[in-house]
Length: 230
Image 1 (spheres, rainbow, N blue to C red):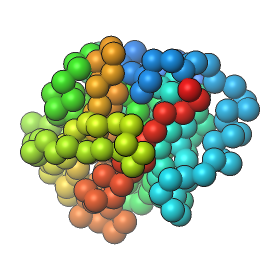
Image 2: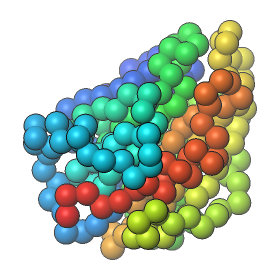
Image 3: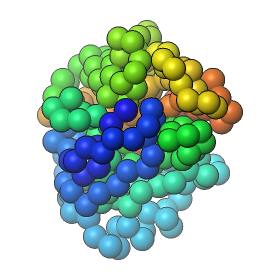
Image 4: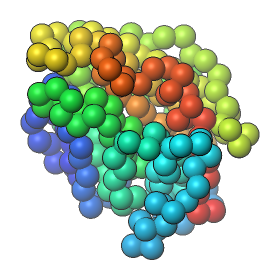
């Protein structure tokens, strides 16, 4: 797999380690709302750690460029709001901000779970969630045949009732994994329409190993998304 760090490609193992960079968010990123400022300040970086999650026991991830926040488990590593990361080598890459990871080096050269916020020009949330799932699968798991298989799209609403979108799980197998690494993966996506396409959240997860993110956990994370800074 090749991990994009601030628009440059760095070859690493089958699954990526944490990435962050000061470069602007990739152009696919879509704002959750249209009225928020996209500027990021040191105060915004510090404020994220003091915000109250809507999922008990979780912590807050903030993506000011997308005017959004969401929650992840307390043991995940959350990047600063102005950091970006993703997968692949341009032009076949996907990435965004609101970046968080879990399980760095849980097996040789791999990170178990990566999440971020991006977007799609497609206003159809079913098409956007499906397309970002297969794109991320191909970019993050380059040794996986056919880039994974999307499951049945399912409706999903945010906990605060502000977002109504589509959840898709794209599953695949990993060829010749390293010792201790997963043999399967899931890319979970949640898309909700905006004025300029779709806002999309992505979780790329090694599965079939301890602490793997399951569909219920992915839905819980996605359902926590809410407008931020508006």
